[in-house]
Length: 250
Image (tube, helix red, strand yellow):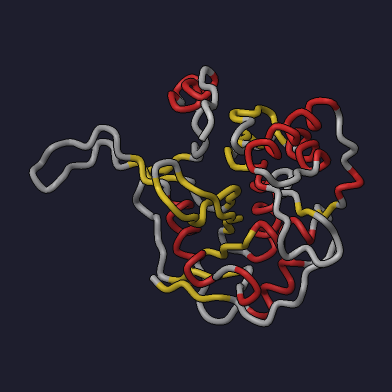
């Protein structure tokens, strides 16, 4: 399997035909296209100014508390944007951990403050899998919309899938057998996350990054798949524990 960046993409603006821009620059065989959520959001007009989010009492309360903990001033309008982009606030200190409206759990509802040249913030796509579906229909290959986020119990960020179309989210190994003949009972491989992480290695970060990568040599034929990626609350014991947790400071 090979993963390669798509280079020379221009700065993306609202209304740009992202699929056409990718198709013009993607060379060779392509089995999957991985697209950073930043350019999907920009094409879909998700760049905003903080003035679009007048802060309510809850946002002021959150900003004041975070400022107290960090010693740095916090803009309550940013907290308001996070609240409006979330369905649940899982943690409100020492940082904001939220569930987005499409089920992804991330810090600050995935709102980005970098690489937004003419605005203050960039929101995630409203419905990333629908975005992936539109791109997939136009490009004729599966598409994964990626983002980066941290991981519990580990340092650093890695690429994850927040939307996908044209392939299953996971590969189900249950019912297969290991080398000793034992039947696998719990293994479900998150294929779209693995492809997103592989793509992130060539997409890069910061000023030198590329927002699109293509994968060739990948094949999921012959495996059962599932579109389940985000855990349901009733089976998510970490989220259940967070609902009863409070920050003790330091």
